Amino acid sequence: MNTTLKVISLLLSYPTADLQAEMPALKAALVENGALGAQEQTALCRLADDIASRDLYDVQERYVLLFDRTRSLSLHLFEHVHGESRDRGQAMVDLASTYADDGFAIDAKELPDYLPLFLEYLSVKPEQDAAELLGQTLHILTTLKERLKKRKSVYVNALAVLEALALGKPDEERVRELLDLPEDDPTDLDALDRIWEEEVVMFGGNSGEEACGPDRLRTQMRAAARKPSDATSIPTA
Image (cartoon, rainbow, N blue to C red; front, side):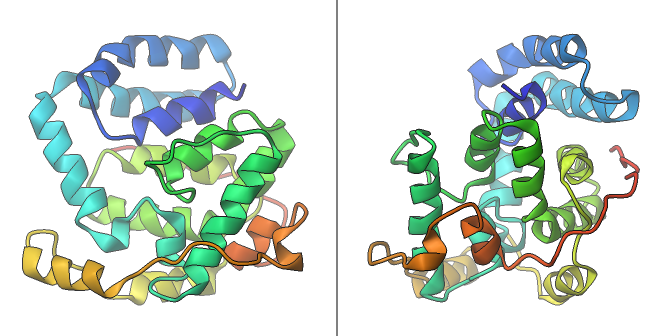
C-alpha cells in the first residue's frame, strides 16, 4: 500500500473524533514509511496537527464550509470537469467500473469521484500507475491548491503534496480556465440551494469503448499529454 496516499486520503476526509485520535498514528506512519522529503512530510504533519488540536465541531464546520458549501473547492473531481452536464453521470459510471475491474469495492454512500476515495484507490495501485492516474487530475489538484492557498487554508498542504506526487505538469490553460470561474459564497445558502437543485447526475447506460482499458480516466478528465515532471516546491500553511 502507498502509505502517503492513504494518509492524505484520511486527512482530506470529513473530520471525526476517531480521525482526530488517529493523527499521531498517521504522522508516525509517514515518518516510518520514509517516502516523502522533509518538506512534504512537515506539510502533512502540520495539517494533521491542526486537525487534531482544534475543537471537533470547529474543524467539522471549517470542512463543510470549504469543501461542501464552496462548489469551486468541491472534492468531487468531475464537478470541475463536467459540472452540470450529463457527461458527468457517464463519467461516474466509468470510474466506478474502473474500481470494480480492479476489485476495489466502494461504499454506496460515496460518489466515485470523491477525492479521498480516489486516493484510497490509488494507494493500492503500483506506484507508477498511481502517479500516472494522479497526473491525469493534475489541473484540478493545482486549481484546488491555488484556491486554498488564497484562503490561507492549512488544507493547501495536502494538495501541494499531491501535486508533487503526480506524474507530469498541470495544463496551464486548463488551470487558468478553472481559476477564472467565479467562486461561490458558502454563506449564501439560498444561492447554494439553487445551484445544487439545478444539477442532476444521471447514472447508468452503456459506457462504450472509451470506458474500457487504462485510458478511461484520461478520457474523462480530459487531461493534456504529460511531460516530464519538474521538481515541485511545497508551500506550507
